[in-house]
Length: 141
Image (cartoon, rainbow, N blue to C red):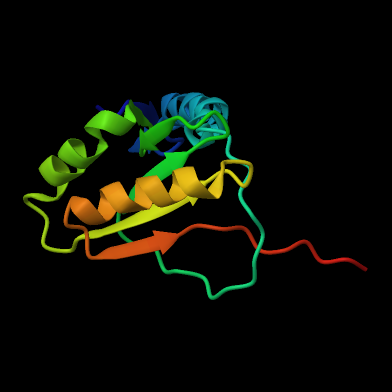
């Protein structure tokens, strides 16, 4: 779908040129669309994570993240799950997976006992590995 314009040269030969103006227009429109939509992709659940020093985890593939926010609401990735359905939902998800690994993000204001209950449900669902997600401590100058 190239637009080719032929024009005669001074000696009578034709010169074929590709018109790149429509291509530039499309690229600029796509650039604007991606610039507008990219910040929206980072939106998620607000959780105030505790700060500790630890080794970072390489998350090159898609991992399952269980989040407990300050209101004691539980989310698997971004889907809200009631505590009563947590074990059954996790068993269903991990039935077909070989690597039984999940990461837990809990707001620092959630009572320790509630986090332990969630961890217990994770273990009862047969999940072998449980990773805790934290934030590094703030450096003070």
